[in-house]
Image 1: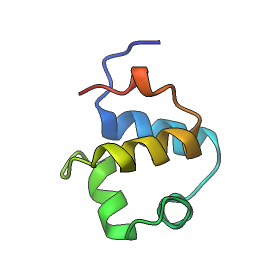
Image 2 (image 1 turned 90 degrees about the vertical axis):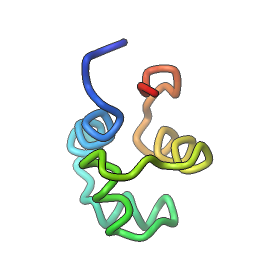
Image 3 (image 1 turned 180 degrees about the vertical axis):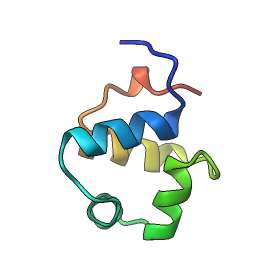
Image 4 (image 1 turned 90 degrees about the horizontal axis):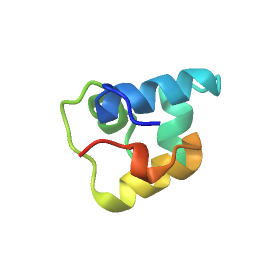
Amino acid sequence: MKSNLTAGQLFKEARLKKGLTQLQVAEKSDIHPNTYAKIERDEQDPSFPTIKKLARILNIDISDIPD
């Protein structure tokens, strides 16, 4: 399912499809809500462990997340 979305856009799209708020995703992934917001805006690159957590929470195949 490769697309032209950035990682942040992909996380946001998946979050909205699941009906979750940024705060809910941040709490589930154990990261600060401001950090998660920056990830969605592509202002901060998440660590690989954070990417794995977000992929699991948002049901994203990790291979679909752009570098």
